[in-house]
Amino acid sequence: MKVLSLSIYTFPTPSSATLFSTASDLSDYSFLTKGSVQEALNFLASTVASRTADGQRQSVQEGSNSASVYRKGNVAAVLVTSTDYPVRVSFSVLNKVLDEYSSESWSKAVGDAKLAEYVRKYQDPKQADTIMKVQQELDETKIVLHKTIESVLERGEKLDNLVERSNALSAQSKMFYKTAKKQNSCCVVA
View 1 (cartoon, helix red, strand yellow):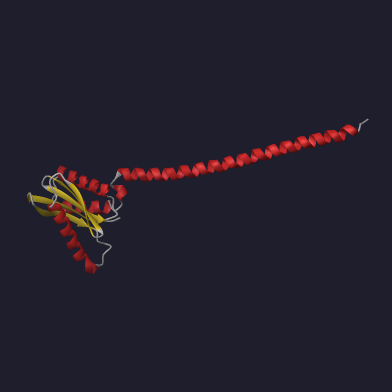
View 2 (cartoon, one colour):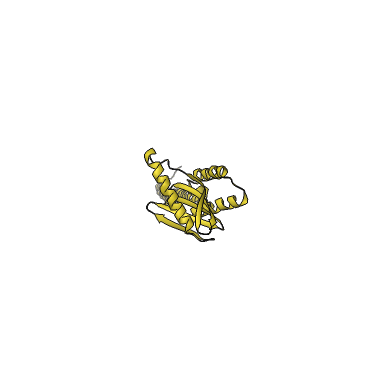
């Protein structure tokens, strides 16, 4: 799961998207291919942004990448990730970006820095989505509970063994008592 780029587009006219700010993480690509990969990501993001209507969210897969876009009014945010990145998390990130963008006045430099921080922070989808974080905690708790139940069952089995041994010992002691009583009944101690 990898976030490749995060971009904000503005719309001077309803159908033309203009890149306002962008940040990307192309650390998995070689120096020679980073330029062409960046161009492909920008083309994918601008195409998806310009074809998204106001108030609409959509996700488009292109090869091994997925572009998720959310447009609010004259602003759209586009997140390009690997296809295994959860779509729900992508839209959660886009919603955070657009809310922050609309609540503050961003310059291009501030936007680039903030988007770079988002790209770095949300490489792990659990950071962006509280539901995934809670699910992970539940899974960890479930594992601990399973181990606890297994140890309780093992203790129960050990207790059953102890009860069986105790019953066997009790039966043996009764047999010993009866045998000793028979042996002592034939002899009279004077």
